[in-house]
Amino acid sequence: MKPGFQVKRRDLLKGAMAGAFAACAPRVLMAQQPVTKLTGAISVIDGGGANVTAFSSPDGLVVVDSGAQGSFDAVMAALKGLSPNGKIQTLFNTHYHLDQTANNEQFAAQGAKIVSQMRTREWMRVDYWVPDEQRYMKARPKAALPTETFRDQGSMKAGNEEIAYGYLLMAHTSGDLYVHFKGANVIAVGDVASPVRDPELDWFAGGWVGGRVDSMDLLLSISNDQTRFVPAYGPVMTKAEFKAERDMMEEVRQRIFDHVRAGEGPEDMLQGKVLDGLPRKWKDPMKFLYAAAKGAWGFYDKLGENVV
Image (cartoon, rainbow, N blue to C red):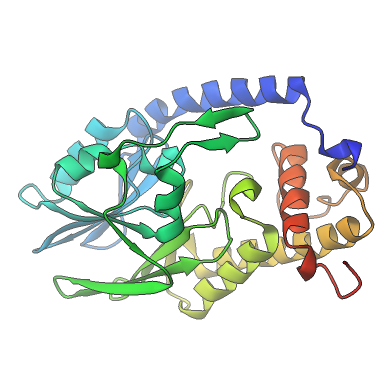
């Protein structure tokens, strides 16, 4: 392992300070724009800074992601405003991270069926190591766990809306899913798109840059020019915006592969200006490059025929 892969104490402290700031930021966001209407039936709710997608039908509410810690009351108030008499029928978890699943228990208490890709439930039901923070995350309570899982894809009906969902293989974690509201032409994609934040690769759970590009290609293949994409954070994206991020990630993939094949670590990549000349700036380029390099070595067989 090259020295570039060592996480320094000051970097951990910076991360802790950033996390403390992020914990405060959602309160401001909630006050500004709690609900954004996409169609007559679909809205995006600010769930403590993270996006919660809600579809209202005569059969009840279908929700994608439950929101971050401390946001349940605000999320429920927004949902009641969308459908005062509608029960929560189904909750999808796009992946296992706490900022997308923090309110699972409360949704379950409301009678919601919780759906996830099978590996998301596996991560949630056991203690696991968080390498960036050098600590264990405790298993979630049984009430917070998905009650229904799938391997590859599935579908359901809510009123007249056909809803398809499927696995996004190794895109951000090892258990990401998308939820496609076909009639409304809206796809909730979780953290597989990052219009305002650094793209995050949970390498310890299997997420890597190649999987992200492949998953974005899959999503583009099931969309059209009018499709809107709902990320885990930030504004709803058009297909053109989503494709632009995909194209940028493909460029990043090619650059990183060249450096990893040469045996370089994230510090080498940073000094080599791997992320320069791209259409966005990284807030924490070292963190991204560390995760991208670790993830790439996890899939070393994809790096080229001469890598063994």
